[in-house]
Image (cartoon, rainbow, N blue to C red):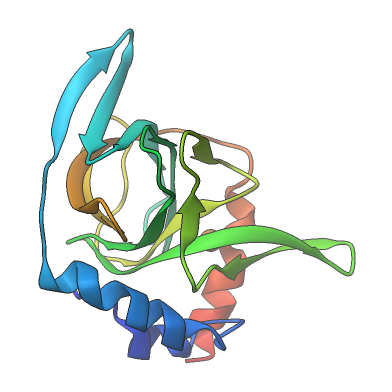
Length: 189
Ligand SMILES: [Cu+2]
């Protein structure tokens, strides 16, 4: 299942579903022009991926336990251009759905919620997806994410277009329990 923005399926598990219409509209342009300018280069010890004016580095997927339904992916996206760009979403052959999530404090509890309208990557700045904050949620996993593997994902940007690249799977123990929210959401489908 490598579905491209499976928004209809996403609605059932979304906590805040009110913005998916604008998300869908903004992805249309990217679908029409599926460009892939992926290139890799070593910057010191970090493998960087470039697409258009964007540079993605320090990307990794958190290793999962067997049968875990979701995994988180992290990275830093730097915009070398002089115009803002936006991360609109992603897809992966091994995940039924890829969403952009953020962590928000609600009634003294940290919960994750979907960022449905994309993530702005400001001109000349970096945005970091990291544990405890913004992350890509790889959902409906069809395989276990095992440390040492590399897994390919595709990201869609409003201006830079699509980029497909490999992320290493890494052991990152400590905050995996937060993803039990998603288990509950799946059970409710
Ligand atoms: Cu999440």
